[in-house]
Length: 289
Image (tube, rainbow, N blue to C red; front, side, top):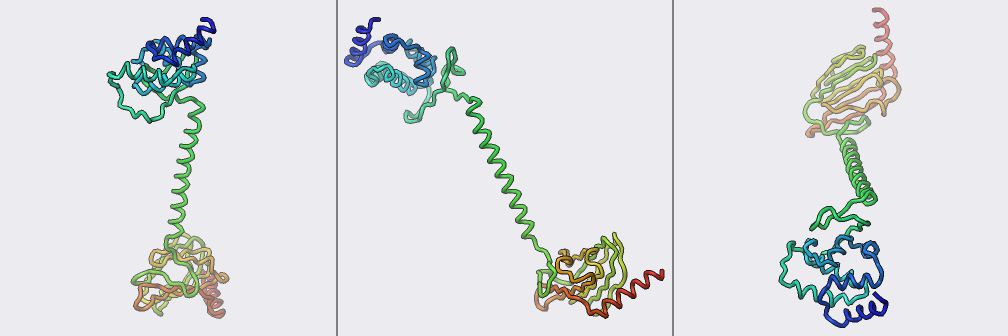
């Protein structure tokens, strides 16, 4: 078609109501010597839909809203009176019932298709996931999962730190009810002396693997010759015997406070003569065996 005829055809479209929408779009494109592939690349409308518009095969589209949107975009791209063409389409197809109840304001997402490509199936507006678009999605999922695992780790760590433990130290009290029950777990040879309610309950050397238990009503004094070789538990709660140790021989005093379900814990150094005499006597007995 000559250039003058092309300009005249475009002018007629702008001043008169179009009758054959598909033919007008096709002739306008050919006047501009533009291929369907070029239109598809620049308008982001698939070639299959462009061909359907020019052939007026509107059943290819899932709903009228797609047809109206694509006609308007295609006509504007070709420099035609887009609103006049859209009005003609609506007037001609005013009785057509949509197959999909879609919101006209909902944004239309069109996949860009290359030469000879089409959407996965006719009548279906599909979303095509490419490798480039899938990578950010996978990364987002990985970040969310990692954040969740990290949160669980810190929560468990915080719960462990908040769990009750009996710390050795002067004047420290803990919520432990009823009698004083002490368990000693031995992991290295150590000398031990236990006094419960003023009476000596045990005095001697214990060896790795031995476990002993003593109970007192109101108070208990425990003298340990090797704090690194023993673990003490008072009513099920472990006593920190190492961090507050004073030399090798240490003495722990457990006292139940009157009128309260509390046990006061004190850690102190035994009198020098008591410590030396007790340990030397025990060592002498061990040598004589």
